[in-house]
Image (cartoon, rainbow, N blue to C red; front, side, top):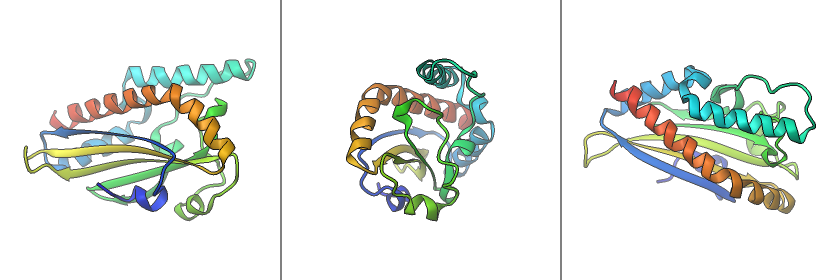
Length: 189
């Protein structure tokens, strides 16, 4: 199932895809997703917030202490909206060096889809996070697919991201499963 993310990261170096079918119409699931995004960190649930807090603390320890990590920003603050086709699809993106365990925020100078596409500085990676919503003919519900794609901009970034992905990939998958479970609860409530 191709989508808008193909425009921004057509051939990722790393990625994951998770899906579920929610017994509700597409418009209801889309609306639940919008509310979940608007709720920010609170919308993700305590386990997901805890995983992000652990990452922040590990980064702080790696940097030798310093100030405590800021409160977890929500998806809309960390990831730039790249494309949206309501109620079918949404793609957000971020440029960074997550393997350094530095701040999870993206490059502040990448502020538009055009800048995201054009960014090509070695040592960095570009990532997309997408959500797709489609009618599921077999159940009458909505098939929701979440996909993460990462494109590294040089070989050094690819090696570093590979080491990081081996550790973080399973936790990223856990976050996506929990997010889909939370979306199901909101959509059928």
